[in-house]
Length: 449
Image 1: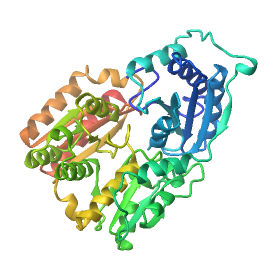
Image 2 (image 1 turned 180 degrees about the vertical axis):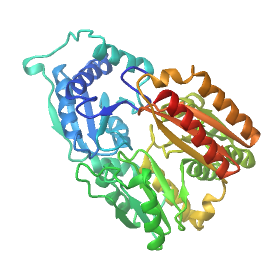
Image 3 (image 1 turned 60 degrees about the vertical axis):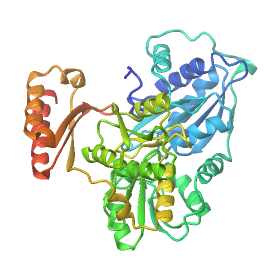
């Protein structure tokens, strides 16, 4: 992880950590690095979520990009995966998304995609960081007619929806679906997407006002959707996060289907149809023990990476795998997309549900999850660097692992996007899991807060 870019772009509190000046410099540096081999007037597309700060940061990015002679196509409010999709469809040189995903409204972020729709490699991020942080002079500031131009797209939403609709065989008629847009980017696309697929759909939390993104709704607050599904006799509910690159679901009883269960359903369906390339699904080390046991029972190989969808994607690309993702709901269908796409995940799940003629709870029963808990510990400066070297913390982790033995596990890691240490514990006894997680969290808080 670099000095500016974390596991999912540059992120911070808008206007204090992620300032307009920093955003302008990122735009300028990204344009230089990503278009240095272009033999034409370069074009970069920009999308954003519904945060009140996104307009401000969009303007700063545009200024930086245009100052070095690249043109900008402004997409408006779209999901992050729309940028990854449209950068290829529009033959752009790069794409930028302004979003802090599932984080609260005070945060914002900048995610950058190359011309093929993939998140940047570490080496490219390091080049951009050097220009932004090390004071390396940018020599190609333009003047006069050579300054970049700005255009605004009127077709971005429909073009993106068209890409999604093509991935579904038939339609989604006959299902009663609840859709939670988290008052974020999906608010701009989900109504038209589900209408195009003839779905009977109740869309909730799709009235963004600049400050209500992710607030008590969406995939990070899924209890509200579960209640809605039960109260309104829906067949299933799907929930997105602020930039709609992740999706979680709830069955007809309001029980949550997390990323592990969704990937299990997708992989099982792909295998049945003979489309699970190399008989492998890719997840991260955070996936539930029950997921790995599901793979063993179904004869499907599981490749586990470190946390972050970029590492899942690297594994998939390196070995030709087609399905992978994270427990949080980032799922990558490499036959259809270059990054996690919440709405793509949703319509694939709904298509499987319709074709199977089963209830969602029956589909989800193919994987039995172990009790698992995650405790987030807010920590002070440099705590992430001190974590591995603190003898008391490491001794507490070893003690917890010994207590769980082969019936559980402990994973303690630093967040890639927030000042948090995440403590994950799973095992057979939920009360024991909670006790061990709280005990570890208390030690870490005492030592690193």
